[in-house]
Image (tube, rainbow, N blue to C red; front, side, top):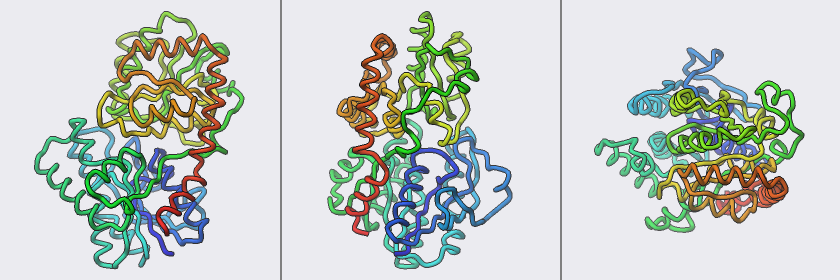
Length: 407
């Protein structure tokens, strides 16, 4: 079958959608399908298009690990940080430019598109209407609900238009593929037929993220001693993560020698977090810029535990932060600061502990408990790795999804 993946985000960018869709493309090809990808010029998360892609409207690209799969890239208006209207320009620039990529990709039998951004559904619907191609909508976040709940969108006109588009897409597409049980349950509650919904959760590459010796060269570069207890946060530094509470926990633990907080990544909240660290003199906190996914096992080798936080909100009870899976696979205990679906997974795995979200005192206590119980940390690490191998290895996830979707 000729299958096209339409997405604003794709490698070499890093992030949960990028990794998931790359693994899906690999799995579909291994199942005998002919795959094409239409995506934007790389610009996430820093909002900067790399020099080799600048000034281009359309080009065919090659992605490592996907040799033989054509990847068509079209222009996008890049955004670093700014007001929401700039983000809308970012979304809609690709909504329109992607038509050129679809034209080059040729006739397809099936098109899978990623949401958010929800507006990419406009492109998919028009393409489907013109070519009679079946659609799969891959939903990693319920939009506009999440944006409204976070206070990021207040325009009634925009909310109404987005809600109408959302309902239209749910009705018109052939299948709805979702990343969490919370999203799946929400669709069922809205009356979407159960047989129309398939499950494609985030997973992990067990050959990349695995237990490994401490990277002493990286430890020296960061100034970490052999006995330091390192708490790693790796991922997007955005509003939803509530990272101010992690810094508040770092402030509580500041007098305790050898406790280090390491933040790796980028995001809209990073300048604010760096300002807090400077203002409070948090010498136990260090920031490292965005790292390619291939480099992240080095950082997990230094981590005594991985912190995965979310803000306290009903919205996030159905979330499954992808950053917890590399930690589990690396035998790094997870301190999950949140509620709901992800909290249940961490408890079931035995690979970490769960604390109340946005509670710095509880988070600091969890850090102390793990530091004082190295045997418990080791046992959690082993349990987490086994749980990841049994439930979240990409080949197993893709195989199950293909069976459910009946492609």
